Length: 145
Image 1 (cartoon, one colour):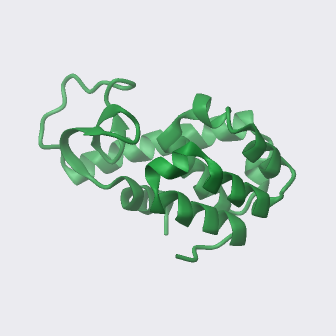
Image 2 (cartoon, helix red, strand yellow):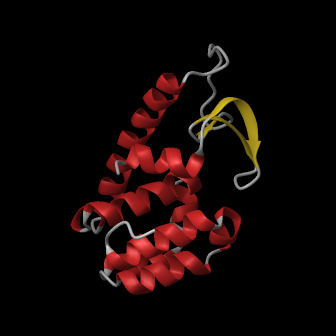
């Protein structure tokens, strides 16, 4: 599965702006947060092609940010990188940085502890099965659910 397919699975698709209670914000397309990145000239309903275009751009930016800020990111396998990108896509970098125990586990390559930390967050309670799935993938380094 690609990161775009993974985010489509976890975020869903909203052709019109909707309120996302897990973020407390308005989103459209595939998890595009409107107050963080307004689309003033956008026509609705948004097409899935347009949503994928926005998603690809956001994913490229997130990957570059993660590579620049966290030296351990590039050392992880592709599945674990997708777990981190998925979390940061939903949380944002500033909130992700507050997960210091998780980040320390990732830095040390202790993916079992990192998986436990994902499951223990308030975020995990907000997103439910998404966090369960991501924690499992972090633990084993492959898609397992």
